[in-house]
Amino acid sequence: MDITKISPEYTAVKTKGGSVGYVEIIEGAIENEPIKCVRKTQKKWQRPGDPPSWRREYDLYSSDFAKMFDDKLRWPTCFHSEIDDEKTVIWMEYVDGVNADDMTPDMFERVAYEWGRLHGRMQDKPTPQIENLSGLNGMKEFYYQNRTNIKLPESLAPHLRHLIEEIDKRSEDLWFEIEKLPIVICHRDLFPPNIILQDECIVLIDWDSTGMGYYGEDIVGLVCESADPSLMPLLFSRTVLAYNRGFAETSGVMEINTSFIFERMVMHFGRRLLHDLDWLGRPKSEKWVKHDYKVLEALHEISQSNGGHNN
Image (cartoon, rainbow, N blue to C red; front, top):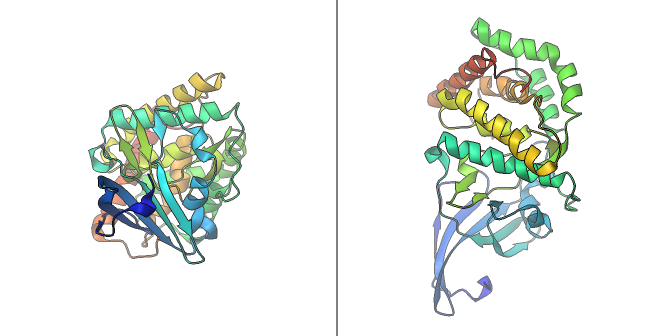
């Protein structure tokens, strides 16, 4: 599709999604054939600790990154992209399907399985040569930054304080073991609004946080950023098993059963959930604060089950 030939009478409607990018649904025609696509405009901005993220999606679409995908897991097709000193503009395929709050536990499991299969395939294939990726130790650095800057409130329930502090005590040993795990490409924003499920394929959007990381890292956000915290224990057990199974099937190695995903859930989200500001520095609403405490309670519930530590 040559998007430069789109008729000047096209319509553009802003979508609800996109926290830092401006995303529009475009409808018009090319040579009298109707089209519907997405135009994403990303202005230059400074993501804390990751300044080049504003142009990363453009760089990924300009690379051979798409070679990693198969007919079960992919990203939207890019029709046209451009960049200048202040912004990127990407015209891409409009993808319809199930996502966000409509995702079922079966769908979470399916996503984890296919993501594990992709990571398994990567083990005997050269990683696409891309310079603009977020750092390998991003999650570790984020944890220690939050541990330094976000103090546990005096009012925090004792069982939640114990959960976080016990992981803190073990953190050095935990990271030592985590860094022995396979290195894989990480989406780093793999949560329901960025996942679109179709009958035969999963389409992932918003790749601006992508980088290299350690096995299982994306399952941390997939579980903790689900819409309903009460489902987290179920999602944890199902997604971890599915991810491990998918990796084993395509990597040709034995299934990895000790991936420290639960511990990383606590390290990555424990203090972050207790902060009074969101990730963009805005005050959290009362509803948001209540939701975050429900996530912490769900983490505690997971810790009390057999599916907690060392998974």
